[in-house]
Amino acid sequence: MPDSITLQVNGEPVSVPAGSMVSTAVAASFSSTKPHEENTKDSVSRPTVKEGLDRATAALAHARATDTQSFGFRRSVTGEARAPLCGMGICFECRVTINDQAHSRSCQIPAADGQNVVTEFGRMKDEGGMMKTHPSSFILHPLSIETEVLIIGAGPAGIAAAYQAAKSGKQVCVVDDNPAPASPGGQIWRADQAKPSSPEAREWFERLKSVNVNFVHGARIFAQPEAGCLLAETADGNCELRFEKLILATGARERFVPFPGWTLPGVTGAGGLQALAKSNYPVAGKRIVVAGSGPLLMAVAAYLKKRGAEILLVAEQAGWNRLLRFGVALLGQPSKIAQAASLKKQLAGVSYLPGCWPVAAKGNDKLEAVTLRRGNKTWDIECDLLACGFYLVPNVELAAMLGCTIENGAVAVNEFQQTSLPGVYCAGETTGVGGLELSLVEGQIAGLAAAGREDLAKALLAERARQQRFAEVLNRTFALREELRALPTAETLICRCEDVSFERLQHQASWREAKLQTRCGMGPCQGRICGAATEFLFGWGVESVRPPIFPVRLENLTR
Image 1 (tube, helix red, strand yellow):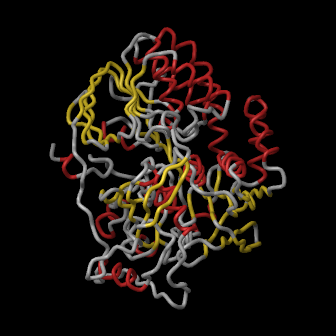
Image 2: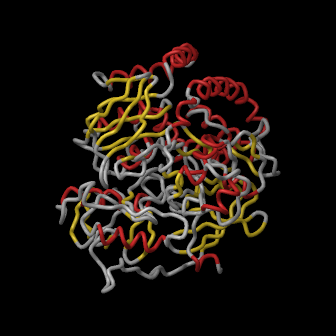
Image 3: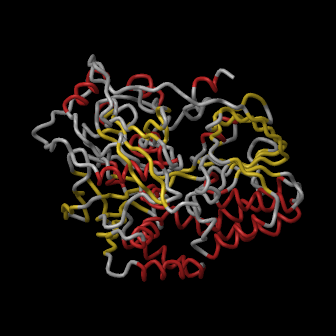
């Protein structure tokens, strides 16, 4: 395998390490391309979308006003520069055109020699000044797979379920949205299979190798045409998946709380930046602020520092009182104490500020500084990247589409991880955020139960109960403080896909009304980013989930 890959980004050659995603090449192109013209806050007037103003006109006006090299991957509907946020293909902010295929998620597509990548800021325009569009060039090859146990998600819970089901003699197939080599592993063990980063990862990858499990990488479930069958979209077209038992291990995603400037390129999720960095996204030498809430912040900061980043500080919104109680709970978790001690050692010299959170991101077309608040003190700190995520949200959309009961934002299950639907099981963060150990034990129980071995699953129930008690402490500790509800200003965008402001949403009474009146939640992410935000800010709940649960190419919907 070659050490590096060379591809074209906006007509210029860019080389990246083997194993990188296309997003890495796009980000690398920014540092190698000089702007044609320096933009300043005074030189560029950003159009705003108001009632009666055509969005396309606003976007075109801004495109012409900023006819320069930008740090954006795409333009929003009002012409703003946007770049990756979640790092796992959910936010759709990383979309570019790859080999004439528009709207490709660059953080989910491996870089390959000779690829031609064009961002919406690439200088490829037709005579009218609009960006060129490219028709789909994919040749579709529908695929059909039949298996006894189908597992959706290849994170720790999915891996544990696959191992136990296969070990029990069942035919097992695991389907994951992430491409190889990022999968299997989920976000926590992303791209770890060749060189595991922890003893737990090494142990479970070895277990996985000892059984016969089939994997389908880079496939995203979008519909259920009939009972016992799911449809997934791959680069080659539709994939029909038929099964006897189904295990959902779709994990969780980061929660984002909108604040002024959070849409600037350079503002990412905390776990999002870690996922990008695992695919060689350039972070070495970058000044980074890590902020938000949850144990993930320390792990992300340590990883980024290991990759050569300068970690300026870690800002945790939870206060000292909560963190001290959390520390007491760790006394019953020796492995977690060891992890915490290791992270503290790795981050020696880096400030850790409890009761601190970002209130604004500042810059012109890219992040230049972040404003932080702690108590009554507010200050600015210059930085290149802000990695910010406010804990996690279970991915329940597929389960909801199938008709599984959802309680308190998570999938409801019985003692053997079976959902309200017979033959459909669920494990990991989708049943509630609880950490790695809980995901692993739930995955094992689900795999055994799906294989008809409830007798063996019973031996794991006590360990699951112990991990669930710890999960309750975890969720209380990192519950979001009330002050965060006051972060958005009237102009702050809540829906990034449709550029819907906080002010416009304040006049709506529900999630449904907001969708109808403002298009909030109607963009490519289908409410996965703004839905959790509006739940926190307004108390709204998503009222229905309909297929397709992810954007799908039109030709695949007609098959």
